[in-house]
Length: 211
Length: 211
Image 1 (cartoon, rainbow over the protein chains, first blue to last red):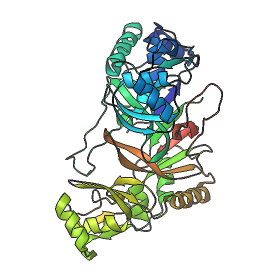
Image 2 (image 1 turned 30 degrees about the horizontal axis):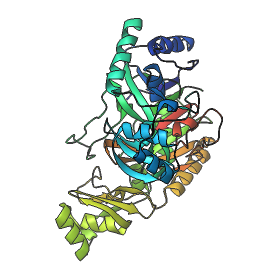
Image 3 (image 1 turned 120 degrees about the vertical axis):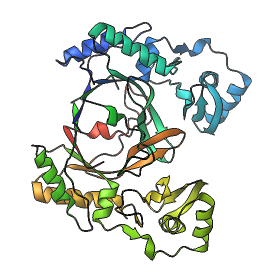
Image 4 (image 1 turned 180 degrees about the vertical axis):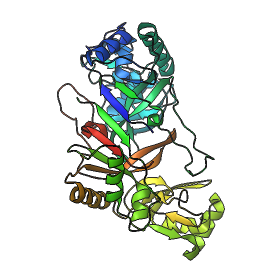
């Protein structure tokens, strides 16, 4: 096994709708004195991808339904925020003070359907998850390939809480050009059932977008 | 932020009861042409620590209780294995074919209370989690300090499944000399609630034991 190195990519600006993430990432990599190489994996946080894709909603334009108002009152949340969460969800898994755990249209079980009101450039805005994260990853990978000649692995990550554990971890919600699951079942010398290890797939170096 | 590098430590032998992990790890680091440096973090898998601590049980010596036999029949598991799982658990969270999700005495919610029958050097043996993983981490860190003059951060990891998601990830079950949780609440420019990021704490380089 080879060592893996992780480089935070510096200097990315506030991302606006339509921004070319590929250009910004390649500029950041260049500022590191590096260039993308075959086997590299680029990790970009969901919020950056969402903002570039215009997945930002102003709460001012949202009309909360009676159901959203009722839930918002119960959990202590802005009803318009709840309305957006519900519009992104197929079911509510759990309701608790100041958090709704839902299943998103993508099938993710996570807090507030990933609809985030923090770091949105203004308290009246929320940022939604990308509509099709694997597709976003594929497109960004393709843009990087066009501009650099190298198609890196591409992971879109988001912070998820973990049931029964404190804190949050970054989870891949979309990927292109990387093996998301490696199946060790039946391999000699290993009785583990299955292992999801992005690391197992991270050859060489890893570029990390703004966290 | 600085880059982080992850080095698998090669050449560790099958670990036996009483083995000096500190010596084996330092030998492995030396084989890499490296030496521990301040800020390094050593990650060791649970199984290695457990084996060195003699947390291995022969199923031949285990007498299954009626309850273990009943559960074993229901989920298709060796009743003696179930007996050991129960002895390590304070409650059963969920029962399913070929798996028991329990809460361990440590408070971990995980499959089979971490009692593992794979890679145990024989089908009649099971490996249990360390009794006190934080304490094991502290001791190993201290041994490394005594032998190398450097006290690295020390993480004991184990593979956990994740509810609602495929695959397994490595989770810290014990740690010494590293900040396990970083609290971002109330910090300007970040609305995230809290984030558990070993990476946030991993300065310089990371040594990884056998996976």
